[in-house]
View 1: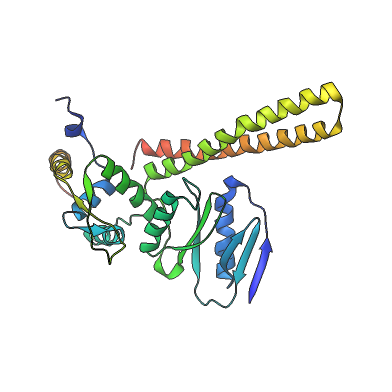
View 2 (view 1 turned 90 degrees about the horizontal axis):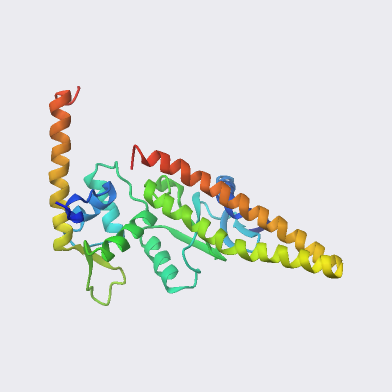
Length: 180
Length: 109
């Protein structure tokens, strides 16, 4: 039987999301499809899986991503589905620990993708905040106030995302002084 | 002196990928070969391998092999420049071992 669950994770909470998917898998619910905040589980699959999320370098439909996903599939990784820039992968738990990146350099390079993405969106949010507050002081329309506040919240979240991911990068860089 | 290539220190992953590609292999073949060579110690993750392959192709250390149309899997092989990199790395590794053994006097049992 298929079960649908709705849940919200922030972009930098992908490890929490993986943990949740792995716990569901251990309970007998295997993720088979993803949508916006939507997770479809199947409880008829006997196999237990380890799930991994990856923020792709390009959109899932792009040539580069298709080539990358095919490469992973050739190594025994299954592609469950994609959501925006996120791809959901899994491997049978019986085949041992599943990692997409195995050395510090490639992990740092991967985390930097988040920073670029977040930094790419943040000017948009800041411009949005300024525009709405300027409009509000001029016209006193509450819609501008609401939109402005919403943008402030979004900008704060993006800031938090950059901060969280940057901490991970700094920790890895410290490790790099003494090991690969 | 001064030639960057001569002083290039390879990562463990790149070193083992280059050694594996003395014969043509596809991605999964490389992972298995590295696992065998290192007695199960080095388990290359697929994402890391993909990134390494692309960088090594760009740097000309390896090249892709024209495969027959039946097989969709891309195969790779080491280039002369890759073989040179391995030679230099071997010299460097031997120096590391020599100095280590000289100072601590071999492995403790």
